[in-house]
Amino acid sequence: MGIISWIVFGLLAGILAKFVMPGDDGGGFIKTTALGVGGALVGGFIGTRLGFGDVTGFNVRSFAIAIAGSVALLWLYRRIKKS
Image (cartoon, rainbow, N blue to C red; front, side):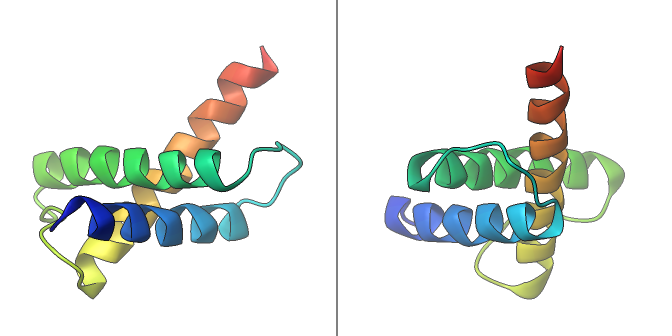
């Protein structure tokens, strides 16, 4: 996937992560995109280690892994921000 595809994929994953875990943590387009792209990387890393597969392209399994990683990253971000 090209860099533009990763940004779009990350933006969608970040938006859905914020939809799954709503909250008042500010941010905007840049933070949501960074959260989504970082979540895709984290999700791909953890998914590969656990045998679920990795983020290989724009398909349903990769998108689910990216969203799960984004939710985990959002949870971690909120825990760090709280303390």
